Image (cartoon, rainbow, N blue to C red):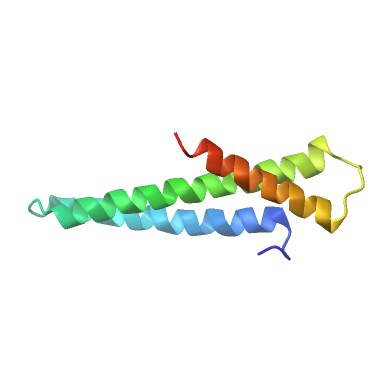
Length: 98
């Protein structure tokens, strides 16, 4: 995805998340069936997947904010932009280790 603008990447991921949430809603509709661990496990797995996806969108939006609002007109070559992206990924990993 690096060749596409960050805002477009975020929108694409949000649409994917929207589909995942609809899938979770469908799974919830089927929860009236007798208790079985597999549907509950699958449901929780999907919730975790949505959570991770939302965190990735947050990372993209933070990157966009840094580029547009914080750094503004400061010239940045591809190497610096990649360094920024890498630093944000590292920060994301660090904060997800709670």
